[in-house]
Length: 172
Image 1 (cartoon, rainbow, N blue to C red):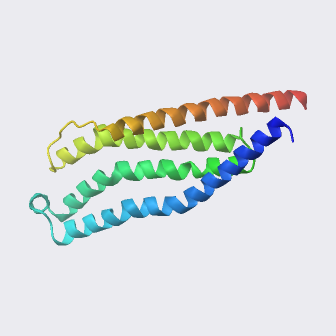
Image 2 (cartoon, helix red, strand yellow):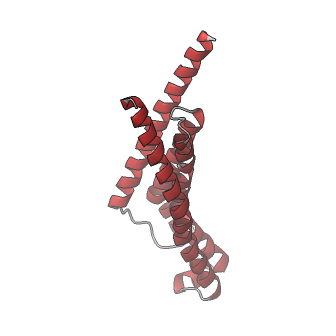
Image 3 (cartoon, rainbow, N blue to C red):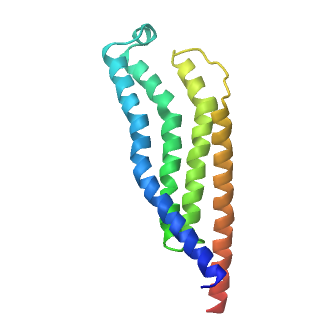
């Protein structure tokens, strides 16, 4: 077995392991986000906190949903990466589907970052929730780096896939 074949086989095996791991962890991730969301919405609607009773139940529920939007977008980014593992496990490392999945994941992560930093706090304060306060957590930096990295890799893979397709079209 040549070194190239060994590397491809190893990469495919690792992609298969990551795919299996993601299929187990994605439901746990979604449950970790959605179950507290359901509980918060239920408590806000049935037994509101003082700030929620001042706003009224429907508006307080909207504030809660906006507060969970960044986490849901970040989870969507993780779910979008599953398609990359499927393609890589099949040995299609430069497929258009994998590069689009990378870019989709990067856009979801970027949306999560922007929601977390700017949109959600401002929207919540405008709706009458807690006042806007600028907080920048280390997790926000990690989310920003993740989104930039995944978007960059997706763009590079898309360019390489388009270049290879153009070369193959010229040959045929």
